[in-house]
Image 1: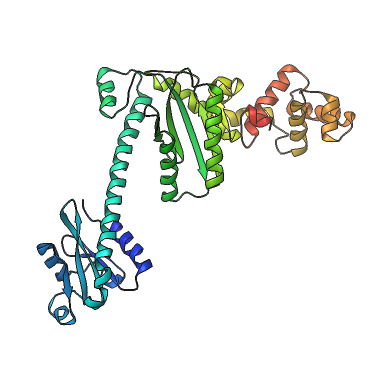
Image 2 (image 1 turned 90 degrees about the vertical axis):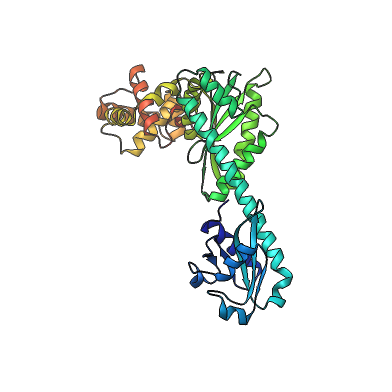
Length: 379
């Protein structure tokens, strides 16, 4: 374990909250890497070098401070990790006055270092899992070597999995909050060792859920609604979840593709979407952004900036092309509605009263909508 400046600074910052004395942290080269007195950072500390040699606490008086290079009166203590001295922490002051909490300071420092080490180890494990699952998602064919690699990581390949993708868009995205989210989710699977929850990019998470006869759609929906509610309440987050319909043992790429399509629609709605519930959305989501723009511009040409006609067309669709119901919803006379529909035909060359015309307008409005997708049009 190497004592790095970032961790040393964190230690000093924590100590500074509870102590008024100046504190330094020194590395194995006897260089001060963190200090409440910024001017001392980067300077040599002879007292720390002595402490690392003897592995014992060193009291520095005003007299000895005049002899030793780069030191001030106080106490220097070795920082131990796994029986080795990895650095020194020093506290400035009259040794007899600060003796009482010098050892407490060292214990607190060593505890913080152990916590940082375990966190780092956990991060390495997580990155290993992330790399494996990423490879699994893009792999077309799973061979014996890959299965063995999974077994080495504690991942049983060959059981039935559902694929779930979760997107959490939060206003509060500090690193500590990201870690909190991951830790909370990992706790949800503490009793289900065959379920795997993996970070999957910025604000996105991948869950491989072991599937059995008890894994009903209603159970999953209830459980994921609970997660969604937790994140939205605690972190002011928009939480979207897409769930595959395929249950796979080896071809995770198939289930992943389904979950990804479901998530796209879920992001538009801000909810939970099962791939098996998608119909027209499957086709709409496959179209490239450029083609969407070209199609929308072509269909709505001449009226794309007319909010009144767009809203009329949208309401006409929502009310199943009923003249009476649409007019009532818009608070206009039916003759006015007929006039607007005629305007739409004249501007675009497409008649919204025909099957082909209303289909074209339906798709165009899906793409025009800020949230997109056929479901968004109905919200």
